[in-house]
Length: 423
Ligand SMILES: CCCCCCCCCC(=O)SCCNC(=O)CCNC(=O)[C@H](O)C(C)(C)COP(=O)(O)OP(=O)(O)OC[C@H]1O[C@@H](n2cnc3c(N)ncnc32)[C@H](O)[C@@H]1OP(=O)(O)O
Image (cartoon, rainbow, N blue to C red; front, top):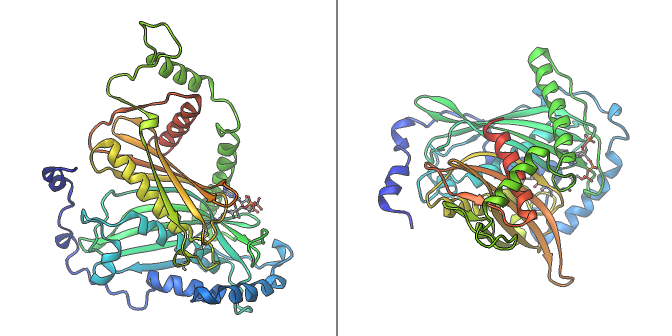
């Protein structure tokens, strides 16, 4: 239980004074609700679940509209995909309810959903073909490369603005960069920067589909494009160096061995007898699990489970685990490398499992693994891995692995923390 004193300390300053007169004039700037309506229109999504099969059959017929190669598609500029979207939390109290936490901050899980929808709209704007009524592309989220928090408190009653555009393209993939800011003290202040990788598929989401080339305009855009290229190289390097594929480095092996030695009982001189060092928690005692039944309400425009919903659920579970571990409410520092490996079908049983996998001073690195479970075949298959970095306002106990598998999770967590906190 959180003490009342603690709650008082952690409550943000009353934001009303910060954003008084918020009713920022948006004119006809789209809102998040407009973004979702627009996406449904672009792909011809069914509004009722009962119509989804017909809508999917109609989309299948769009296959012939796909480009045979990337060079057949006209180049687009970053301007073509640029979007600005408002979330009028300050001026629309009814909307605020959806975003509000008990602690009078904004539910970050909801922001993840909005970023996901915006990244999809940005990608559709880049691939827009005025000759077609509907887009033949199914654009799905493949990876949340990074979300860097520039400010840790998001006020629930100040207007929010999202901006973003395509920053790099491959043959069938698109990198979208987005920024979120909040209206405070008469101006918009930066809250976070996000980079998502989206992948274009055919109308039935069965194979990859080409996207328009990107033409940079001016040195700033050239630089963004080069950064996108470097990001792609980094992603390939990271995946080839994954601890699931290759052994840890010499330095990492030493860390694991030293953790092991620290837990040996010097009296018994046995490899089996293990003792928990002071101010530490065994990794097996820092897990939190959840189950989601994937109802039609959470479907995306392609009648699969919306990626943003998965991120929200995984974030909330990860946050609860970090909160329970620290014994106080942590703040989010960064989100990185959220991998969408397989689509989640409507009706699935989705098992979410969160694990504190690395700690350092006040930082807590949490990994959430999600898998679908088929009760008929009893088969499990991994759909997503999520990585969240949290910070507490005091140092937290050290997490200690016992098995070799846990040690690999520990090293993976350390890599993620080093990348997000001390890049
Ligand atoms: C109702 C209102 C809601 C409105 C919001 C709508 C939002 C809709 C968006 C979603 O919700 S999507 C749902 C969440 N995402 C998923 O379910 C995706 C699940 N994952 C997959 O289906 C596949 O893993 C994926 C299509 C992403 C990749 O499949 P493959 O690994 O077979 O891809 P392939 O090898 O053919 O590579 C295709 C491209 O993807 C790139 N790629 C694949 N995995 C990647 C990765 N992990 N990171 C970066 N790029 C990646 C790859 O480099 C390549 O790019 P280039 O052609 O440009 O070189």
